[in-house]
Length: 404
Image (cartoon, rainbow, N blue to C red; front, side, top):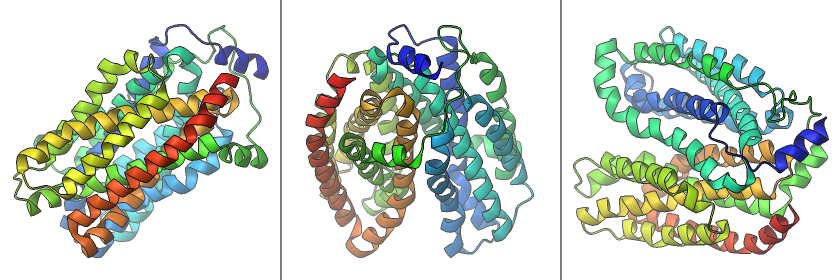
């Protein structure tokens, strides 16, 4: 049954905008709302009199928990067991959101963040294991455009909304409780996802991916190259996101937050409106174009002399990031045998988490030693390196795609 399931899964060409797939997109939106609500977490921690040097530790340990746990759990996650993982992890996630009302000092908060991060990554990894079962090969880029838009939308909406929501609810901790209540909607969405494949057969019980198979997969030059490019790209994205406001102040921009608002909505527009087009153009062409444009975009920030140019660069970044991210996930999908598709998609997400953990850390060091010009110049250099790695990946990618 396992072989037949993966054989049928690899031949999917039917529409994917089904109840199952859209329920998954809805769950992704809820999960990222659960993250976006922490936009004002640092000021909240400061109000609790957490030592200023420890605030970053409390914030960052959430991502660190996911970085450690995701590679360990993904070999055990498949469409046949993913719903159970999501259900259990969501319960822990909701409980963690409720407990922020009780955790007011450093150690309880640190422990709570570790548990919350672990629950979140189990839930996210389970959803990725389910998603690959509903993506036809002819609409891969469009599918990942929709799922990534579900990730981005909360990041664009929640920061400005929190300013109005938090006072109404009576404080940040109560806002987290309200978010926990909102997360309960994951369960009716989970019920909407049928526990059977497109042929009406139960998802098979699959043997875990062994260590040798795991390492052989990561040794594939296409997989390794695409993962490296993803990590490098998100080092720049995360560093830019966390230091955007500070950079804006240094150049006299009143509200630098609009830079990422413009960039994120551009990314969403590119993915939603351009999704069908992305599947008609070779992914390697789109990848080269988007990564190549990131080099002058970062160079523009490094040599910025005008506030107008600052905002004008935002849609350029949005286009580059908006195209590159789903294309990289699509390439992982194209070259993975069906059994390893969920693993490789989760490893792509692991690179995103790695970028959001190391990007602010390394970015802060670079800004401290070389200023913002030096930081964005390094981002431009890293983007050029990512482009060269991507160019090296194209020939084996073409060969692997023909084989699949």
